[in-house]
Amino acid sequence: MLTKLAMTGFKHRWRDYLVLFSGLIMSSAIFYMFEALVTNQDFLKQNTSISMVGLIFQFGSVLLTIITLVYIGYANSFLLSMRKRDYGLFMLVGARKSKIGQLIWLETLLVGITATIVGILVGTALTVGVSQILINSLGLTLHHFTAWYTPAAIATLLLYVGLFLIAGLFNLLSLTKTPALKLLHSNDQPNRPQLKPARQLIEIVVGVISIAIGYWSMANLKILQLMGIGIALVTIVLGTYLLFNAIFVWLMVALKRFSFAQRGLNGFTLSQLSFRIRNYTKMLSIVAMLFALALGAITVGMGFHSQIPSMANINNAYDMGLVNASTAEKAQISAMKPKTTATYHFKATKKVVYFQAAEFNRQPFTTIHTRNKNQLTFNTVHNNAAKLQKSEDNYQLMQLQSGVMATATPVFLSKTAYAKLAQPEQRLTVFTTNNVIEHRVALNKLAKHHFHTTSPEQFGGRYAMYLMVNGMYSGLEFMGMFLGIAFLAMLASCLMFKILSGADADQHRYKMLDKVGTTRRQLNGAINKEIAVLFILPGIVGIVHVLFGLQMFKIIMVTSPYTGIWLPFLIFAGLYLLYYLITITIYRRIVLQ
Image 1 (spheres, rainbow, N blue to C red):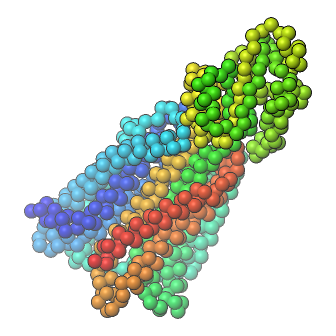
Image 2 (image 1 turned 90 degrees about the horizontal axis):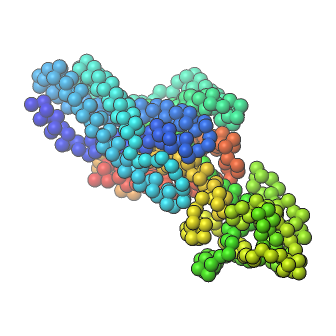
Image 3 (image 1 turned 180 degrees about the horizontal axis):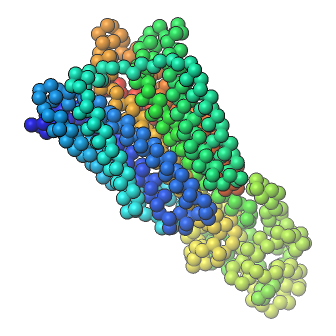
């Protein structure tokens, strides 16, 4: 009988359960995506030369576990709030507490296990989709990466099932020891904020000091090593929560005292935020951390991507050199519309390559002379034969040779002296396109056709250097972009779940406003303002975290981590705005029927 009553309650509140399930599924899916990288040690070792990466990801796993713990705790409280009234009614009609306890336990476990299993499957599908998009669009080279990784699935299942076992026990004890009448009216009790100046001031001071320590440790990661990451993890999480808990409560109380709170529906909006203020502070702290993680990861990933062509460009002025290029290969070069192309004739022995000086006088050979390797700045030098013979950078000409000639010494002869050599004459064709990455597919095809391999050790030029650097940084670039997208999805899940979970309870408030003559435009404006606050506050804190957090990547990035930072920030702002518009659209459809 109790099971039938529970199923009836489920049918009546299917929309709330849908919000709960979707939130839990996304949470477990994102956790699986993260663990698919963290637990795959072969992937981490093969795709990055930085030994600390594995340990850094372990710290990240701890942080995500803390976020997951709070998220599941909130999801469980939402499940509990939906069922309190039902269980109170069951008690009033004479149901035994032991039976209700069993029902609570089974329902919590069923919700948790089902959502986790579906979430792991969704996470696998997302891993496949996101990884393929990144690999194809960015031209990445990865080793030992797999979308389905059994240790990651086991870790996700054990964590979530364990947390729901604890949640089920908590629900059993909480509901069976609470009087029936209190259960019936539990959702009508507001959580009104109380301003306690001394406590708020202490929380603000401790929060600011904690965050300052975290920022300092990230900026001095070269000295502190792994300890700096651990310090930052603890202090920034603690400081973020304390600041939100102190300042947000103070803001809600303080803003009501200003005259603008009496205009239009501003007072209603502030009251809406105040009604569940304590839950908001916890969730907004999580969202701020996820915002920082997502934006920071995407920024670093794009930073590695942007420095690859820069590092390739300092190696050589030419994309590739072909010895004795065929007619078909010359056609492939022409199809790329190169900015410069030149052909030099030569005769070679095992140790020396002889060139005609006159050809270099007519077609000067361009070399790269670096000014500052840390900043990747360089000069291009146009060399005739005499300058190239004396130049320290003439090795760049020999890089474009193939086989044993790449290590030979260049010698520039007059036309007469060159003609006296008995060795057979050969041709070296060099060319430069406007962008190596843009033409990487055509260059790859050309390398396969001429060298019968795409291994960069077999040929020289900018394209060979691009392949080497791309292979070295692809793993880090992929990790940054992949995790950034994953954290962004979890951020959206947290915010949307928090906002939409209270939408059903807000319906009657908006109905009352509608009955007293409030226009639809005013109602939409109130919704826009309320949800905008929940998006803007963690966004501001997250941006500040990112700006300071990028300091710790100075030790592993050749260029400044702040180079081109406006682009990932702009992209992220667009996605964040899109999530905001989606959230208010769904919320309006629920509360403004």
